Image (cartoon, rainbow, N blue to C red; front, side):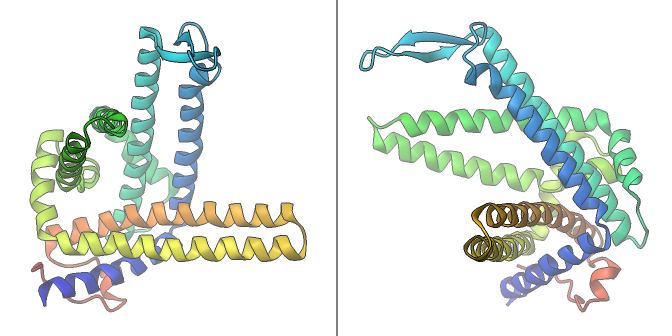
Amino acid sequence: MGFFAAIGRGWKLSKLSFSVVKADPEILVYVLLMGVMSLATLSAMNAPFILQMDWAVMLGIDATTDEEVVVGLTNAGMAWYFSFYMLLSIIVVFWNSAIVANSHMRLSGGDPTFVYGVSKAFSKIHLIVIWGMISGTVGLVLKLIRNTNAREVKNPGLQILFMILTWMFEVAWWIMTFFMIPLMVIEGRSIRDSMREGKEMMMKTFGTNIASGLGIEFIGFCFIILSALIGFVIGMGIGVLPGIIVGVLGVALTLMWVTAANTVSISALYVFAKTGEMPQIYKNNGMNSFQFNV
């Protein structure tokens, strides 16, 4: 019973998170800025390798085609990639912190402005930079492990073992870091304290966290399909280019909406885990069951 109650709360939470984003559309501006800055960082990060600049890549001759191909990265190339990967992680953490700050004020009964979330994130910039580099490093290591494991075709047993161990680590990391940003930004906790307390809070709301995330992703998936269908119909009726534009814009807006709602749900679950009750705006919409049992 407890597990299914948590699933039900999670589904309600996903819908209510969308309503919070609707009440504070500046949250979508945060997501847009995060996306633009992330794309710019990704472009700068990969440009030397796409353009095959001598200082970034080592070239060799493919024995099969006799064509010049990239066989590795130089030390400068690896340093470049690592630096921009860390910058990308910090950018994501910064704007997620702004979303958490804004949504927390809204959930606490306030009326946040665009400047409030940005200033709140800047006030914890030292923690954001440190955490961005830590999470970025972990993400990069996991990416390298997955890429290495994908090439390990000579030993399928070892490949499966690595895949299982990697998955177990990713789940454990998710549990420990789910509430990192609210604890750092709202309470000003240190990295170590945030990770320790966040793990305890996560275990209290585990079923609701999973259900909320799945609910938001499912709603987003439905809107992506709808956007694609609308684009297809417009493309068939008016022209291919207008159809592509409408479809792409629809998918982009949906992804922005889902990203914002996911982060807002973390703010709501943070209040839930701290107080045993959901924020007032959620209770006003009929979410009045606050049992932790899962």
